[in-house]
Image 1 (cartoon, helix red, strand yellow):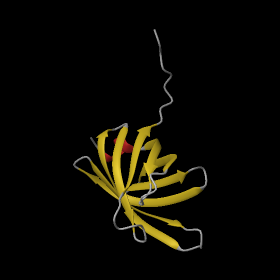
Image 2: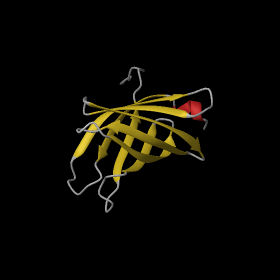
Image 3: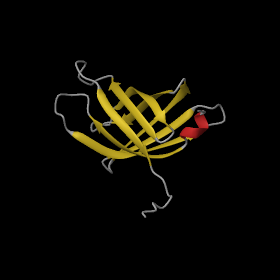
Amino acid sequence: MTVEDLEGTFTILGSNQDNSEQEYKGTLQLDVDVNKRIQAKWLINNTQEQFGSGFFKDNILVINFYYVGAEQYKLKGVVVYRVLSPDLLDGFWSEKYGDPLFLGTERGFRVTSKPTVIN
């Protein structure tokens, strides 16, 4: 698998870095730049934008991300995905001010525009 195989849009489902067990949904757009690095953009619960850049090796995708929090502070973290296939990402994440006793989780499912044929 190459880094270019990861380009596209994914629907994401995740849980936060805390004990709440509250889940979130959103989208993740992955693009590859001229240096073969991943450029990422998340839209969480249709309200929060997050941005990141990272790299891909041995079916592992690592992205350093950031977003602007409620009090206008720039918050940073890292997400690590096992790329199970070009269409399925299985990951965990942590951010600097999250609860250190927990990791967030996130799964990504490629959005396809191909119609489903049912016989």
